[in-house]
Image (cartoon, rainbow, N blue to C red):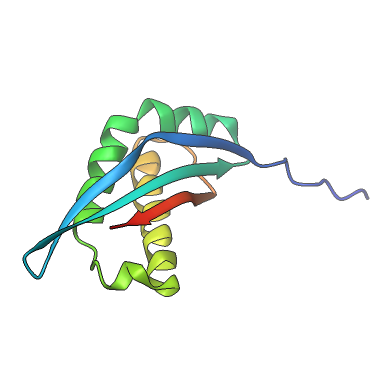
Amino acid sequence: EVESLPEPAIYSSIKPPFLVTFNVEGRQRYMQISTTASSRDASSLDALEHHMPLIRSKLISAFNGVDFENIQTEEGKETLRELTVSVINKVLEGEGSSPIENIFFTNFVLQ
């Protein structure tokens, strides 16, 4: 019996980048992240694109709730990445679509 290899991953950049403002000890701080989603199922990336207004809204709310100090650490960035996948997949599954596999932060700027 021949083992079937998984489909190759396909990628979709989420545009524009997310820009979130934080108030840290009375100072304005910013987080800008560029993200790319991956899946082995093209229909999940089509659904990602189709539901992007809802996904962006949910992600911005989620990002506003994160701790600015925390996201400066590698562990904090990884937690943020996992949160991003979770928020996206909750929307996709709620809409009857297949989930994405992963999210990559292709640019991550804190200021």
